[in-house]
Every structure is written in C-alpha cells, then in structure tokens.
Length: 373
Image 1 (tube, one colour):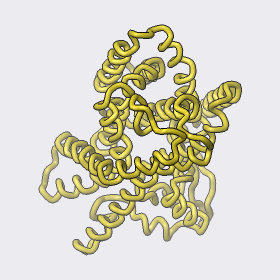
Image 2 (cartoon, helix red, strand yellow; image 1 turned 120 degrees about the horizontal axis):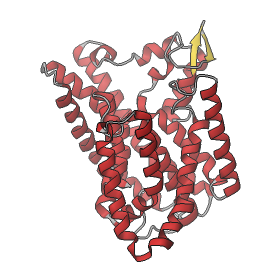
Image 3 (cartoon, one colour; image 1 turned 30 degrees about the vertical axis):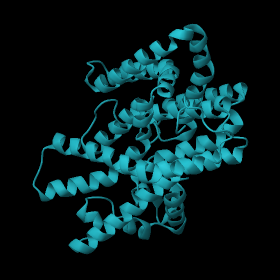
C-alpha cells in the first residue's frame, strides 16, 4: 500500500503541473479515501494502539498538522520574500490567486471561515460549496458561482481534501466498530450520490469528489475491506499470503502506472481501478507491513501531497526565468523536487513527531505493523 499511496500522490503532482498521468488527480484523491478507511479501521479495531478516543484524535493531529504547519510557514515566507525581492505581488510573480485580496473582498463570515480553515483545516472542503453574492456568504452549487472564489484563499490549495479526512476521523471511533451503523451510513451515502446525480448536479464538480456526505461511502468501503476481506484472505491463503500480497501489490502498481494509457473509456477504467483496489487493498496492506522499503516510500505520500504546490510555484517561476517551455521536462522536475522536499519534511519533521505519537499509542507498534498508520 505504501508505494501505491506515493504513486497516487505523484499523480496529483502531475495533475497540477502537467495533466492526467498515472491514475489522475481525482482518482488519486478518491483512492486515498479508500485507503484511509482501511487504515483507520485497522488502527481502531485490530492494532489496539489507542486506549481511548482522545489519544486517537491527538495521534491524528500529530500525523497531519506539524508537516502542514511547516509547509504553510515555508509557503508564506517564500511568497513574502519573493515579493520583497522582486517588488511584485506574489500573486503576479507566481501566477497564483491573490490570497490577501480574496480575504479583503470577502464578507466577515467568509473572512472568519478562511482564517479558521487555513489554521485548523476543518472547513476547507466547505469552501467548495460556499460563495459570495451581493456581499454575503451564501450556499452555492459550485465554487465558481461566486463574486469571490473563496477556495482561492487557501494557502495550500490542495489541503481541502484534509477537511474530508478530518470529518471521517471525527466520525470513525463511533461508527467503525458498529457494523450496522457502518452499513446504514454506507447505504445513505450511496443513496445521496444517486439522488444528486438524478437531480443533475452529482456528476459536476464539486459534487463529484469534494462533498463529504457522498465521499463517506468510499471511507466506509475501505473500512469494510479491512473488516471482511482481510480476515477472509488470511484464512484462505494462510502461509501463501506473503506471496499473494507481493503479486497483488506489484499488479496494482503496474496497473496504476499504465492506467492513463489504457484505450478504454474513463468511466469503465475507473470502475475497474476502484474494483481492483478495493479487492486487493488488504493484500497490499499486508505487503506494506512486511516490506520496510514499501513503508518508507509510503511515508513520503503525505508530505509529497501537502508540499508539492510550493515546489510547483518555485519550479515554474524558475523555468520561466530560464525560458524553458518543455512541459513534460518541467513536470518531471516538479515531481523529483516534490519527492526530495518530502524526504526532507519526513527527516526533519515527520520522524521527530513519530516519537511523540508513540506516547499516545496504547502500546508500541509491533515491527510488522504499518509505521505511520
């Protein structure tokens, strides 16, 4: 699962600096939801790492926020220093939205939400369904239908997905252990998606993959993959599970890498991708637990995801100054530097935070368990 998560993160990097590569940006985000549901179910039900809900929430905080805050700080400093050096607003220098202008033009309610969501992450996904109309904050069917595009006020624009993750984390300890509640919420989430499609908005952004009530189904399917399929595979495969987990993981990696080149419709490809991923997710997770290298690579996925836009800003600005216009070359540089930046974030932030996280675990992780679940 580790290498797969990093491939998904790199898919998002490509999406933001080049275009659709590997599984693509949207699919990558939704595959992360499946994987998150599986991991949180494993953490809560099987690993027994937390003695109470408070420790679980503290641990989730330590997993996400320190690296997020470091990237926020580096982004603000980079934009501020660049503006001072070149005597040009950062928005013009890096061809990004003017965050300060967006904040100034927003009504007080939007100012509060923008400020709090940038600090606390909660509510970033809500910005996709809110707009400004005649000086007031209003609900809207699309973030584009607004006098001020509020989500452009996010310092790390891709971090809106963490708002959905956090919503699931809040819910998970109360639902995951109750199969009836899980199935009920799953049915409601799927039904809501069908209703939204029927009324004509369910296939349009932001309702496709940014609306937590419908995306909840993906988290819950991931959790059921852990609770139903993982025990089934362990019982069925027994001593052969290591071999099958390796084969399954390599298959998913290859399929994910060549996915965008497959000559069939996007809808059918995506359905096949999701089907394979759900069915083989337990085996890929088992491989991750047994393979140190896969765990190391997987640990890079979150810092790659959260830090790549800062890298893209800097690379594109530099390439423009050097008059380099080859898009694929620029994209490869963005990916390579995003991975390198992620390695630095893990080395100097993530690894140090791990020692603190251990204090909030019910017991120390066994060597075979996923290090950063």
